[in-house]
Amino acid sequence: MIIFTSICANYLHKTRTLAKSVKDNIPDAKFIVCLLEKEHTQLAEYEYFDDVVLAKESWEGNFEQFIYKHSIVEASTSVKGNFFNYLFKKYESEDNFVYLDPDIYVYSDFIELKEVLKSRPIVLCPHLLQPGNIDMELSSTAHGVYNLGFLAVNKSFEEARKFINWWADRLYLFCYDDKENGIFTDQKWIDLAPCFFDVEIFKHRGYDFAPWSLLDCGMTEENEGVLIKGDPLRFIHFSGYGRTAQKCMNDWLPEGKHTFKKLYAEYSALHDANDYDNVSKTKWSYDFYESGEKIDDSLRIKYRKNHNVMFNCENPFKYSNEYFQRVLNQKMNLSKQKTNISKVKEVYKNEGIKVLFKKVVKNLK
Image (cartoon, rainbow, N blue to C red):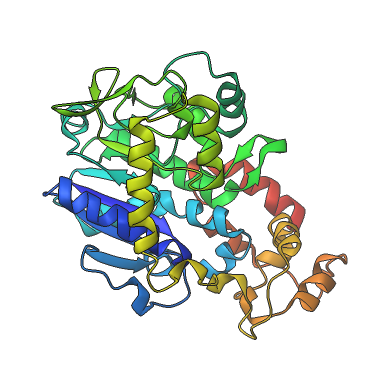
């Protein structure tokens, strides 16, 4: 089994915590880190990482042109589909591939998941498994029904490869935090996956348990370990670690002692200990031009909407805010700066996005 996560360097402390929990509980797993930074760093050297791959090293095409249009959260999610394909090729003899968010902690082996993957190509976990938490029901309509802190596929199935290719295409074009237009990074797209593909909606309560699961959760600690309404705990997704998770505990757990509060405190101690080198304060290298000037995020949004500028700029990090403010706020003179349509065609070559390609090319001519 190949397990990977996608991070920027400021989440290395969380990833260290995750990696050791994976190695302690899933002995047959390899743990891979996809790192969204310009260069390798010694901070990413850790005994429980089997490999650390820069996202740009796994990319086919112009990575700088692609990544410039994303904020830090969008960036770390935008490469996940592509990285699945990269791992499929690198680990040809492996069938089972699992993505886990860095703020996850594994408590026991993925026994049920391994069994499901023998017969099912794609496995997703819903945010909610029971009605009643109206706050989270509303949140799911905005952020997505399925939580993409977890995703598992068996690449021996053609259906799994078709799914990953579809998802990677959508993330290349539309992995934005843009809820007003129905998009929330990589996650909202997956609401469509069960309509298009053969998906297992995995309802085992011990997988992807999270602060949003706390209302009437039925978590108990027995001789055989921690159970959630009878299902053995496999991993907790400590999403919103800190203020948000604390609010969930205050709102949805009874006063006094509770098994989740104990597990949260234990995780918190490990999480903070793994930030021994203050790696959490690391600045994101793709937040800056090569000159050291910080990128104005409002320009990223304008850039991704302007194909003329995007496809005429081989490496946007060589420029400046002043340059992009000028070219993005004026009408491009296409007689002087004609877009290379063959480059655009290469980017938009897949069957699923031909219509969009035709629209883009029409606007460029």
